[in-house]
Image 1 (cartoon, rainbow, N blue to C red):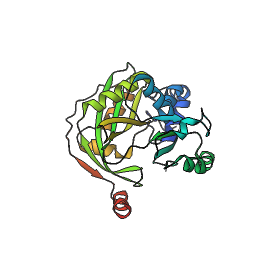
Image 2: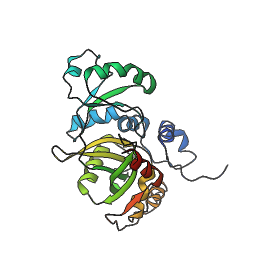
Image 3: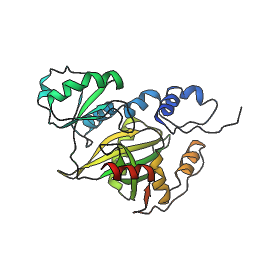
Length: 263
């Protein structure tokens, strides 16, 4: 009724809905997203870790808790502290650090009842940098645009949404994320979370967010017009070239204030 040309997912639930119904929606509006099976291969954090393991992409040690029982010896021998993570979550919801096997057993059932399927992942100690990367891949599989930023602070402090971001130029991160998207057969926009392991300085893939994140404003402030990139991609228009600047800072004042109070 309103002559809408494109629909761009800005949240996880809308991204999943669009991907699930992409065939029906595409007859009304322009949508550039992967099909639902491909979508789940990247959005499901546990499936993404399995893909990284199979193809040698750097990632934290991960065990799928749906494939083993809590009495499995792998969980006795797992390097604690460890991070319990739901396969599907946003903003750090449902994540919990467990410091021992007994602590895992004491909280797992309640967490699973609330947040669904879980995996356990080695805890990356503090001291390394955290990064985000944004990429747009067209239907031919070509990388149209890629940017990276460093997460300087986040809230909740234990692991949550970015509240202070710094634009960076890092082709290694962009290429790593692009290789993963090619393996998945991804189409459209994707946002990655990555972390540097201070023990060996390796940058590890953590998750894919299949929608436009709020912190993308940091890369826009640094020179890349992401709304234009996405809309031009959706409408099959020619793309422009942009000049990207490092060390541009963007803060979410409210969450950053909370970080200083709680850190």
